[in-house]
Image 1 (cartoon, one colour):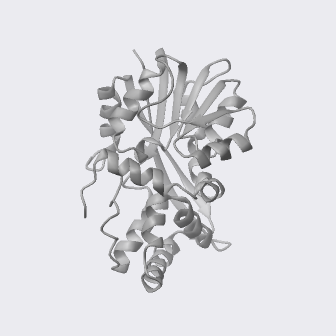
Image 2 (cartoon, rainbow, N blue to C red; image 1 turned 120 degrees about the vertical axis):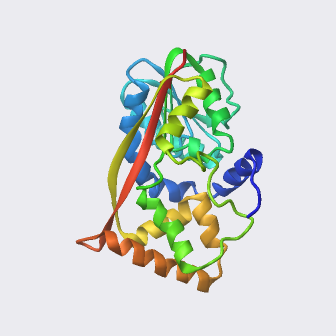
Length: 275
């Protein structure tokens, strides 16, 4: 497996999202939508606040913040995601913005949110520090990421690749850079927030079950995410079929009536205040 530094990983992520915005918005975003309200609560979002939603994707967090009466700016590194968010939510100030260099002065916002964005950064510490920079003193930051051990909704794909015996293309990253070596992801996330300068860093867990048609979920993840999508799309047809067979076997253990599956999903929501 080739070595990956922050710049190379960020380049992979930027390229990997190209052409995936619509598929992500119609599929995988249904999973991440579960944490929208808890994330806004953790950031203390309410009417009248200036809110930045970073890594906005199709704009679900930003739209919910608007519904609370906040004044919302939403940014994403993907121009396609920015267009998707702006088209879906005309009242939203949506623009391109790439961590760790956001186009805003210090202290521009009362609250900052990021729903599953920090885990897509090559240098998460630098990204968090930048988000704290654009917060006013006393403003709150809230970020979500995936828990590792019990997060089954996405883990079944990596496990299917491993179980199939298919080799991952060697020029692809095996995983993201975010807390990749942490044994205790909750403690490591809290420490990362504190080290970046967040006061009162707190990490809480949010658990739910993602009810979905397994065929649909296969398409959602393969078409709408950069890493899994890159792995599967690069395989020969016979290899991809082996992975799909292993996936079908794994998700069968979560079957519920109606031909659906309920896949356990577990997220961590980390928050803190700019001193």
